[in-house]
Image (cartoon, rainbow, N blue to C red):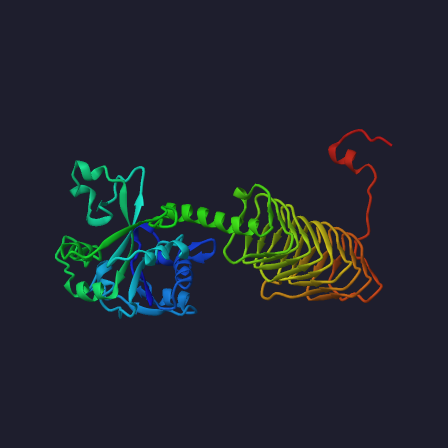
Length: 429
C-alpha cells in the first residue's frame, strides 16, 4: 500500500503575504488542492502535515479524504520534524511538498516502478547554480552536497534535488527516531536520512523528473509562473476536447470552468467558475460563475455571478448580474441586474434595471416579446408582462400589463433663437 504525506506546515515568508503559502491560488484553486487531487489518483491513504494558519488550511481541505496532523514546530521543526508524529501506515511512503502545485500523478507513479530502499527525485538543470548537487555513482545516490560545500568536480554535476522522496516503511521507522537537530538551524532534516541510509549500505536510486512539474512556488513571481503553466494545461485540455480558442495565450480560464459541445472563445477573454455550453464568448469578455447555453456573448461584455443565459445575444458593453435571460437580445450598453427576462424580448441601448435603493436589491421581471426602447430605466421591484412596448427614454416605476405601451417623457419645450441670444450673436430667422 502506498501512503502519501504532504508537508504543508511552513509560513512561506518569501511570499510576503499574510496568507499561508499553500492557500495561494493558481487558476482559482489553492496550491494544496492540486497536490491532494493528484495524490488521490494514486492512493486513498493521504496525510497532510500543517501548522501555519492551521484552521484556514483545514477548512480548505475539509472535503478531501485526508488525515490532518499538526506539526509541533516548537519541538520538532523542519522537514524531518514534520514526520515525527505521522503514523507510518504504507509499505511505501511518498513525501510531497505543499508548494508544488504542478505535480502530476503519472510522473509520481514512476517512483513505485523503481526497486530501492529510497527513491529520490532529481532534476537535470542547464544551470544548477544555487542548488545542492546530487552525486550519483553507478546508478546509486551517494550523497547530496550543498553548493557551498561542493568541490570543483561536484559543482559541474547537473543533477539537483527536486525534493520528493519515496521511502520503504522500514527505512522511516528505523531512521526517523535517529534524526537530530544538531545543526545551525536547529531543525530536523529529512535529507539526513539519505546520508544515514547510504552509510548503512541501503540502496538509494534517483528518478529524473520534469522541472516544470516539480516547480516549487516560493514567491509571487513563482506563483505567476506556475499559474501561467497551469492555465496553459487547462486550455490545452479543452482545446483537445473540441473548444475553439483564438490566440489562446491571451485567454484566462480557471480550474473550475467547463465546456460542452461546440464552443468558441475569442482572444482576451476571462472565464471563471462557469459552464459554457455550445456558445461563443467573443473577444475581451469576462464571464464569472455563470451558465451560458447556446448564446453569444460580447465582444467586451461582462457576465457576473449567478447569471444563467440561454439562447441569448449579449453585445458589447453589456453587464449582466444575477439574472436569468432566456432567448433575449441586449445588443449594447446596458446593465441587467437581478432580473428575469423571457424569450423574444429586445433590450435597447442604455437600458438599466435599477436594482439597488442603497439598502437592498430588488428584482425586475420582464415577460415575452417585450420591446424596450433605448435609455430606459426600470425601477425595481417591477414586473413587465408579455407583449409590452416601452418608449425610448422612459423611466418605469410601475408594473406594466400585457399588450401595453409604457411611456414617460417630459413635454419638449423649444425656445426659438435661444442660441443667438445666449451668445449675443445676430439673430438669424
